[in-house]
Length: 67
Figure 1 (cartoon, helix red, strand yellow):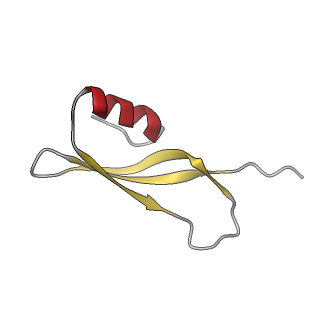
Figure 2 (spheres, one colour; figure 1 turned 180 degrees about the horizontal axis):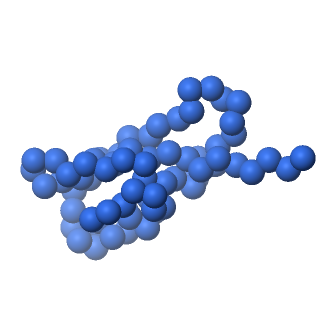
């Protein structure tokens, strides 16, 4: 499974259908200068663990600024 760059909500649904175990960690920007949409998560890293489960690191999409 290649989930990097995809919306986590879609990946999560695929994992549920496939009955795969998974864990999720969120990552955030180091500074709060950039506003993020925490409801719109994307997979930035994935790893298949020895027990066959998956570990995903997800990040929120940055909000668009209107100037």
